[in-house]
Length: 367
Image (tube, rainbow, N blue to C red; front, side, top):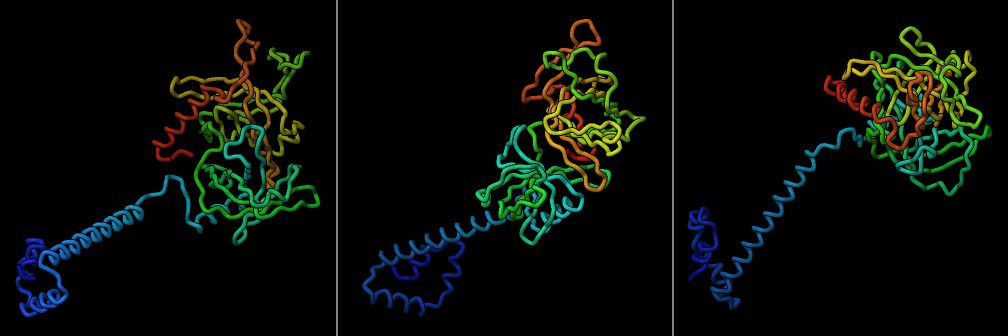
């Protein structure tokens, strides 16, 4: 067998006509060269087969790499994920401009007693500066630690269409201010995600479904327990209903709590302070479109955090449900207080989820 026969046998049948057209003198030269090295036709055939196999494997690997690269380029980021530095900067600048509160914690899943609220003070080229007004003990050992942050960014001055973003950042510096506040310098995040802070989904309630709200400072009985006789409480300190919307507004609600925006006017008229740890009774009346009926909920809530809007002097108050009032026998004016667990108020949680789904189907999307 000569070199021409070997090439014809090693090549793909579709390539045989082209191999036949090769210059015979060239093939003869190749044969002479290999003969001069002492290679036998069998060894030459094996060598050519080895080279052909290696080339086929290389081509296959190359094609697979192209396919994987194409899939990576075409793969979409998870819904709500932001990685573009310019977009991340735009969102943080929006939060700074609208004085959005930022909640910061060393734990990714903080419980009700962890975390602290901050205000965003500066957005630098590579850092975000936040201020903590609460008196907390800070240490230089914090520098280099990762903190987990939640920020609510509103769509406008009316605070409609709020979105909640989560991101990680590293503490690059800290300093105590003359007034006792603490300033932290954080690295800019590389990724931001749409994500709720609590395990309970929160909803900016549609105004047509939020029928009313009444609030009392927690009344207690002789033994320190929450008073059960509604008549003994007196008039509520704060009221919200369709005809009276100038004192308090429900920002969002979940199975585990509620966030209220209390106006400066209401604070002056009532003298309420809403200090963290204080407890209040909330009577909430909502509309349940599934049953086409109103539903009243009696809740015992603890102030979790508060944030003052520097422009309006309104207070935004985060309240966590710790108890639910249920009818006590036949007396319509008596309540039995039931402690709440981590799941919060089941009915309210279901109501929020259904309203989210309705908003999504209508094209508004879930917050």
